[in-house]
Length: 511
Image 1 (cartoon, rainbow, N blue to C red):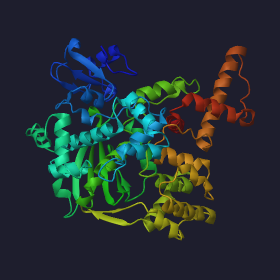
Image 2 (spheres, one colour):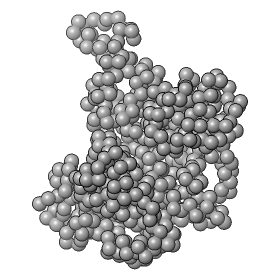
Image 3 (spheres, rainbow, N blue to C red):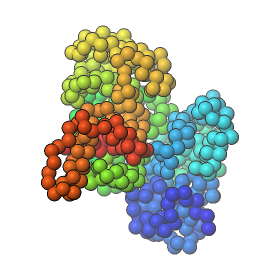
């Protein structure tokens, strides 16, 4: 029997579903041929007999096989899982563009235009999607829209029309047709299956024009919340970011015309975050899908930590010091990450954060929403024209902020490597922005002073340990000059690929 699995074995899937192991949530789905539904491996329902089960490596393969998503475990709420993440850059770029909505609506890109943007032929793009997802780019885009709509129908009491708009549909007739055709229920019928469960909408907190709603965002454990929380806290910008308690993180955001803030509260017992999103204008509901995707990226909720940790554990230099569940704490945008990196050049994290707070205080626009007075991160246009007199730092660095902001304002879609043409922007700054602003999983910050110090110390200890075992005595410590740091880091880069960013954070976390 073809179980449509690329990386997992049928036996490992069987064990995972019977034990309801949350580490496999979203990595595969369980199709039950006797009922015609498919479930997450953590579904609370009684486990079906193995003879009645088929396994799928993605939800869309299960739907294409004629199965309906389970209304109890809701596969639309599972964390994303891409077996090729970090290794198949073309398909990743395509998925990011599609998830960002480039194929939605009457003016959306067709397959030829999407292929041209990716720099490949349309035939090759179709082959990639068929190989990895078992479907076409167009059907994948449609499926992602439907799954987001389904999540909103289950978890909120937004009117069906607003759900359709939030999912990217401009025609409600088309929304109903595609929903019924794919999921075998209309949006209204699916909502009725929710019964008397309380939706997660916080109406009383909204302004007259605004909108406020809450969603559950799941992840695969382990997740080291204390590390994520402490990392954000040390770099926090007052009124732009906050932590209401030990389990929460919130911040303001801007995406397109949409402005607002979110607060994510960690629920470790259920491997999820309860996220409340406040929009200043209900008209910006069309940006909700992008906002949710950004929050997932910010908290790195789709990472497969078991796979990443297993890969890093094979590196002898750090194998016995791996900390469990370390995620990549993102920034809202690559521009913000770039500004943080420039301000952090040649100063401590504490000093850089003070400069950042002052810059945002003077140049960030005030946002009054849901009874709170908050502050937005300054726009590229604003910082391009700012005199930055409030910042006590070298004039060259102020000029770099101005030049960088002007470049981003003029070239918002430029590849980050193009930033290297700006005076005051070097490889470290670009790499940092890729790691935190784009959540690139494969950035080993070799030139970072903390990383360099930790690597040299670990390398010397490893060498000293080997010499001690051979000679029985303790030789003198090696000097940094005696180490070929370039060769060391190149070897580590190759061993860590495609998870160099996670190695960087592991090194930063060492005491």
